[in-house]
Amino acid sequence: MSTYVYGITRAEQKLPDDAEGIGQPPMPVRTVRSGALVALVSDAPIELKPKRRDLLAHQRVVIGAASGGPVLPLRFGGVSPDDATVASILDEHQDRYLERLAALEGKDEFNVKASHHEEAVLAAVLAEDPELLRRHAANRAAKGGDHAARLAFGELVARAVAEREQADAALVGQTLAPRAAGTRPGPEGTGWLANLSFLVERERQEEFLEAVRRLHEEHEHLQVQVTGPLPAYSFAAAD
Image: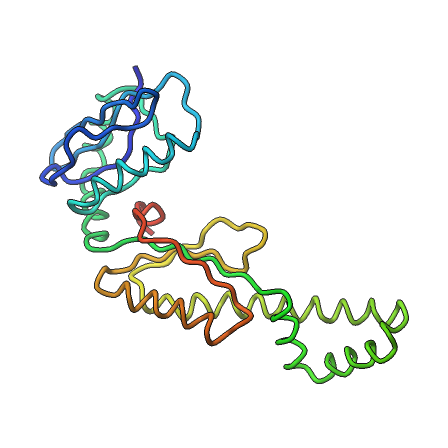
């Protein structure tokens, strides 16, 4: 049967007893050791799909292991042919994995997504551009103005908002990066002007979260969502 891999940690690390992994019924979690490393693994289900139950089970195994020290978490779906293959990979990359574990010691990942409040950002770009504000007032006085005027105004506003998105994305990164040990861009998606993951030392996490709160307080058109602390999925690999 194939081997499902949850994460990698130091062989000396204290791990939870009787952990349960993915599958229905849940597969018991075991370890595969090579040198100074162990991988947390279980048998892989015959049919592996990203069901919510299994996604949460994967996360619980990683979080439970991280309670005793740093873990290199694998994303959901990591399957190896067998335990022997896992052991050979640990052996081959021993030094690199130990280096990454040292880099993650005492740190957690926080994901920050930022978007614009539509009405608030429109008010902000109008307030900053006298010409846009004049056109807006003229259109309102003319009960919307003619089609050409509305179209021209809309294009100018869209350009101003796009420029503000770029500036605010940079602002989020510039504000939070100095309070983190590392930064990674997240997948691009619609609806977000910034999607960033930060590796934050535990003694600085309240400072980091306070900086996130201030971003919204000082820039009301910004909507900022923070998720964490999380296992350091985005930082398991070296730069």
